[in-house]
Image: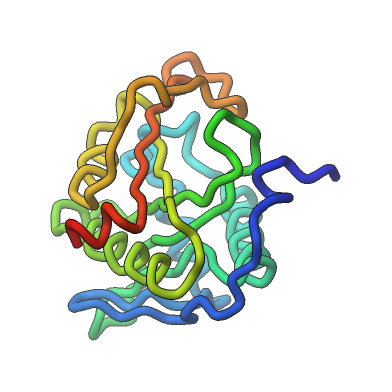
Length: 199
């Protein structure tokens, strides 16, 4: 399979931390025992409201395997999110390398997906801020992007709370999405200088 420009031009970061702890979260590597909880999150129509459809178990397992493979490949990726003091795997938060070409690629994207019963507590923002801090302290990356469907105001608010900025000229039609309701995407960016100015 031919690598996209985004994948081919992204450099591995082998020294990226394997685990990050925040006040309420443990961002950790994935365990086989996470598969069932992950599948339940991906099958929840409330969580996948801004996706073409909830994921089947097979699709969830394929995503699980791809996440683990990407961490092995890049040295960074999507952490499994665990609520501190519990054994609750509540979703993911971390980094991916987009698998398509657009005007803003090559790039590294921050993204999150959390179980519905954890929403409204600021956990995506808390985890995202820790991820950005690690990126700009431990790697040579100077900019991180985030993207979502135009109608996904909840994720957009997280981007804003992280200090990310949107330029409407960056909005784009996602080349991997056919659903007319979801194809239009917004893009937010943050540089190292912006993050350190407003941590």
